[in-house]
Length: 228
Image (cartoon, rainbow, N blue to C red; front, side, top):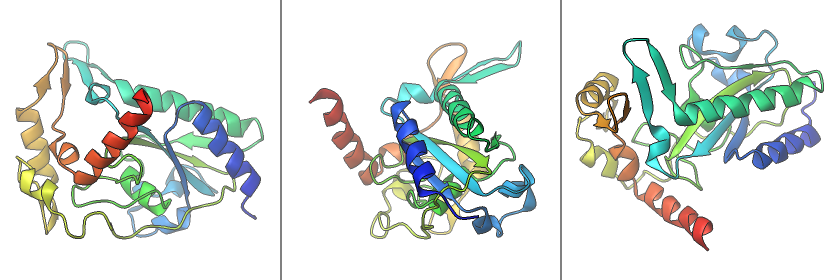
């Protein structure tokens, strides 16, 4: 099936209108190196495209988690917004007879890798997706679809990080190194050092984002757009 340039452009335009800051498209064939549970075809037979969307964290408050231990209810503000936008994209494609499925976070497909495979930007030394416009201050979501959208060129290394180790030097958990990312060290530090906003709501450590020179540069540039 030939990929549809016009449909791709229409979907990008629609996503921009609803406030999605980042959107890209990856080819499911690029996921063969991952475990079966992390491949698009596991969630939709005949998957033709992975849609990756992102929203810019212009204020860290957007990254707040609220959890009630007594009821088990848990909410993340920006995740809720992303899920709503994802449903609108799904409905947009369904109207023209293309089925889609919004990916769960667990096990799901790897979001940062999906963004890199879609050509949106690399994964940096901070183990985060880096957008050219927004740095690492982007939260992502993915949709698998039958739609024949035009896919990007995968990015395999970060040109932003070659001469920089700021995130490694500033990580309080020592979870980042030249060897890679220590997930358990990061998780343990976060759970022990939550930034409490209330009895129910907290923000996890964001130092690897905040110390990234490219994120700072992108943040300053984007703030001008809000106040000019």
